[in-house]
Image (cartoon, rainbow, N blue to C red; front, side, top):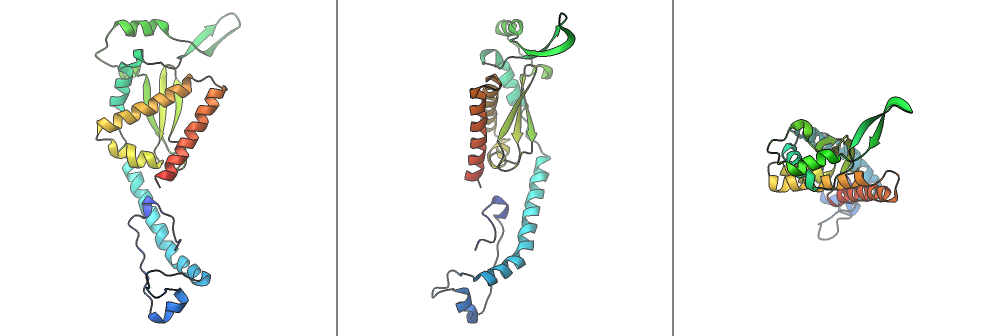
Length: 227
């Protein structure tokens, strides 16, 4: 009847109509009485009656989602494993602060590879991962149901991945898999690889623009498919 759109928030919503047989003609029920077709004036009245209940169901669903968000997913295991393998991965150039004493004594941000650290990682097998040395950090943002699935950023040599916790893919696939590392961690690896590739693309280049467009298109299409 078009009273509300198909959405997970309304999975438990049920609306029942009870009307006498004298209204069969008005409601266009037909001989089998398996469906009804409301005239516009009647449809408007039904919508006004049902809307407060529909909104109440949506508000309760959103509240439950926010309550679940208090139990945030733990990506620490994935962060540590990516860090352990970082010397084998193609990583974005580290952002470092460099002092130029000739032109300007102030600190300037430049990008350059940390070759000395990379060589040391190839030689030494690290059994203990210091939290301060992690090469990736997963964080969360609220970017809307139809927003991107993730955003990427960089702090020095750390890749920052922001999950969109409002995206249907995160709510229906990522978050429910938090207790299953065989699914949860590979999902984190996949998004890390995409984020890292974006950061390796030069700012303002055609490749950067293409990656941005792909990220937005994937996020929007996933949201539509999962609704």
